Length: 274
Length: 274
Image (cartoon, rainbow over all chains, first blue to last red; front, side, top):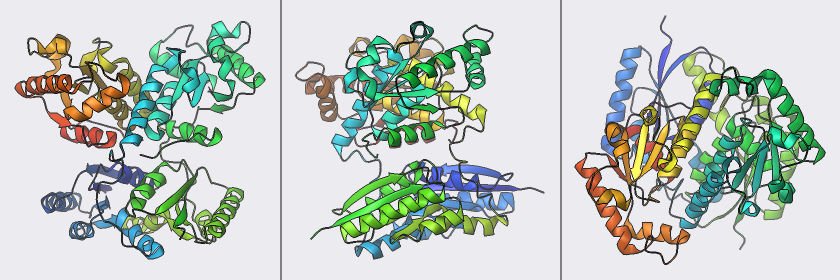
């Protein structure tokens, strides 16, 4: 039996939100073969009619009607898309009505407000945060560290760089990151450059076997990647962070999103929404 | 009159999706004073009860019941949270039932599937893409450019770096970026290092007055930021890209999300969902 279902993520904007929410719904149905197609910027009747053709074709091919998860601000557009032969769920439309009732206001039904660059200050703050985090990646510069909102510390490959970049991109947070290396473990003291900013430090740690696997991807068979060296570095780094009272998060089983969100909330970082 | 409303974004996971969808809904109601609070990782009865307390307190303070936008996989947890005195909208619960009916399956109702690191290959691909995009930022290295999925080109500050990093983080795409500088405009030819990869190039352009404003943030009163220089650089870069048939996107009024999504779909880049 063919269990294939085609799922369309359709949006009048980027489709990123509908993909994320849709994906978290679909992961609840394990073992099914979902074929995902994203159609962004579907904001004209012509594009909607083209989407409907694609949906109907997929349904005939699969022998099962597709699932359409959409986010359309314009209700007429949404209604038109609903004519496709599919299970049609529009995230936006379902929620806008109860919000209008609660707020006693009609919504402006204008597409394209999210992620906007309309507010140029927020945009510049975001770009600033990205440039800051990039310039302060991996301890590249210690200049201006006082302007960081958070300074991630941890051994090489514990997740600092992806987390710092995510904090900058998603939340507009100036996130520096600084490596803890065997050089620091000799005297057991934090690197000199970050000592003045102890209250901004946030430690990332990781299980030795996972770290060894990650490091082996880059430098197989190296001392650097060996389990015994990973065990040594992590033990030393954790002891150092504990002694200095630096909050610490184990990244082993966490996604970048989870690590970043946990830091934001634990360290109460001020952030933007884009 | 006090128009303040407190809005809670509550999730058993990171809350990122619920924030994004919630925010795009709220931007439809201009002029209202929404106070946003995000509560992530609300996954125990104790945390739910604490959230309910905060919600009810905010309602008393505002004199209006808060709006709760949530995403809770566990229906008992969601039901418990619904006892708060608020307009309660759960994104997850609303959609899971019609999906179960359509698919003829009960969902696993297990939290924490999205953004997972469970699939370690996808995780490694994502980290790889981030490292690749970082190493190939701003033409830092031309080594290994053949491994890029896309190479962004454009004048300084046209949006290449944020876009490349977003492509890597959000979609796991290896995105290099390479500046077009006055040095290249002399002979009107693409930089030598990217010429062999013409089919991977994607151009970013921008309106001169906006570019001038962005550059002035960094180097006020400079030749680099002057409107006339920005006009010259953009005219030369656009002419070069047009002549070589390189697709081009104007970033002036677009968010990073919009630029990245447009490139993905235009260039048909293979990508992951996290």
